[in-house]
Image (cartoon, rainbow, N blue to C red; front, side, top):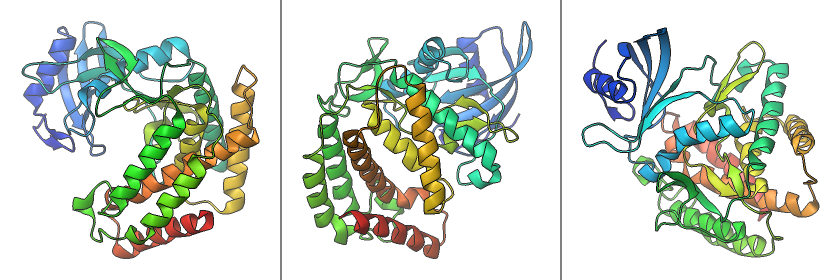
Length: 359
């Protein structure tokens, strides 16, 4: 093993061994393979256990991008989802909420085989992509039926248990429309000054000229939306980058990244999944429409109640999709920091086309 610095900060091998020992004293770390992706510290470990060798994943919140009370929810959500649904998630071998000497929160989980296809979904066959989309619809339908929750907001840990947080950084809302309005307005404010990551923006005023029109559109459309459904558990970041997929069959072996889970209405989650998953690899309009039809039919069939894609639901999905688009615009400096200027300009043009079609 060699000490190295991962994207989430420096965690040397000695510290890795201490973290494992804190959760599984009888396990011995034999190898550490740090992930080059993500923002927090993630490593795949080869460990020797009393029952044999195995591969596990160690994740620690180190990048200060996710608040501890939110990060603590991820291993608990793995356990909750495994017990309440058939959504595939890794088994959890232990977690630590806080520690005086070690980077925390952190947890140990099962290593699940599979590939991620962020930005490369075209490497999968059409049949495999179809299977991913069908699984997504079924998984979200099952997750949404685990509610309702008492308020709209961020799922985290309070007094050791999963809860909808109610803090200055993570306020509760009574209505999805309130949070959508506030989130959109905060994002538009950010767009006037380089987005969410201004330090990475080579052109901080890239979208500033759109700000006034965007605010007017949000005011007009969000205020006119119909009453949302009750909030429930929503995996707002369901995309290829958070899936472990069998490259041959398209079977989803595991759904990852359960930190930052939201308590929102189902339409919100569906909008985000359609935006981040169905739009992978920039499909033409007919392909996107076919994917959306498959996703929605499968979701509707998987729901056990009388939930339906009414006109009101479709209108709310469109509004949430607009919010997702604003978020993507604000994240452009981060998501495309390794792209060429021409590639970033092409993404800007795509965003502008979307906006101009709607306002």
